[in-house]
Length: 146
Image (cartoon, rainbow, N blue to C red):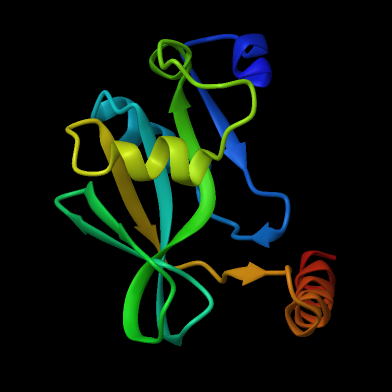
């Protein structure tokens, strides 16, 4: 809440620090403002995974979050959010809270929580194998830009 209170403007972006998901932030922000959303979550379609919970959504609206379990196919939270500052600040949240549990999950099924799917590569560097993989992928991306 402290950081949200320091944000200027009506909307701000939050990005998890342990993921790489190079999406078009302008598209995500336009979608967010176009739907007058409280929060818009960048989603990633995954196959054959068990490390992540899944998100059920229809017509852009997030209906429900499901616990981690093996899935053949599903959408996950990509760790990038656009949030409406005033709507967030109006919530009576404790000083320490979980964005996922206390805000996102409790807002699922409402008319102002949205998701937008992206096809860009997704890396969660929270485990050693993915951290090593990220170094390889990011190194290749850096060489392409030169």
